[in-house]
Image: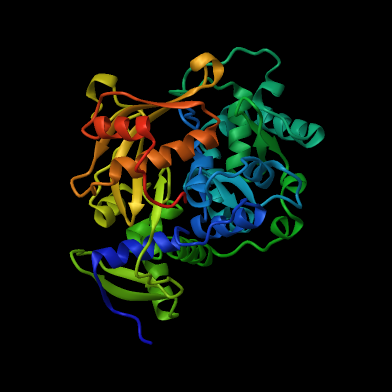
Length: 415
């Protein structure tokens, strides 16, 4: 059966959500096999240090797998070489990246090497960089604090407090001379040499040409998106548009991407050859601000008619929706957004999931509050909190408070 060359916006949404794993059958107890399947869908897990609700990299897995054991990701990102599925690198910002993608990012490492050859710690203190590399090779997994020896840290970098040892470690990680072996309980990076962290076949893999590497990264972005523009595919691994456009053209010629038209979109659009074209998607979940479904804001607006900006760095008096706001995906639409906080010290230590604000989109169905109450209860259970409390802010707050308070009349799958 031939595939359509013109698609409606709802069809494009469903293609995108299916490519991201929202039609995969749920596993009663998510296992490493579930994790592997989900990672194949997302292709990346963006990392962020904000922990007002849950660390960003855990949330996309929850959205697709349900209430899973976080140790699955911890093992995949910080366990033995045999267990390791992902490694942290600058892919889509800082992200857990499949280990087999790392050779395709070596051209980025070389760009960092060229930059450090003319500026930064590599020029300022080359002897320190060499000593840090030798110390890590001798000691194994270390944090910057392990190498600081009590030295004072500066505040040159906004939001950070970096010592010279930290700067040297970051340089060596970005150039690929060291890798991130995991994170400790304080969320500090643990650095080590690649040979002790990565599978042997990854360490020994040949370095592809820049053109081949960009093509593979665009291929992965297109597979994870299912459908999109060159800008969508380029953003997945933060690629430059000109080489990404060349890669798209080559993938079209190879038959891996098919030009299509999405009604209402002006930019040339492409469908991945393996993308499913489902008739419906029955999702019900909350999306992290760093979820691949919404992380490229122009795409989220085009697909879902959903204008979304994270307001963490916006002064409180200028925020529209709140500090840490999560879109609520119901079916194939984003129908609401909620400002959430995990207050783990409240209620005598049982903890409270606080809904600081709740807002409905204009197209939200009448069941939105009831469905959202179900999802919040699922999230509460996964985060180990004892109760849910809904504040008064937002046009959905009153209905949501009633749905959470009664716990009755709630409809929809548990997900």
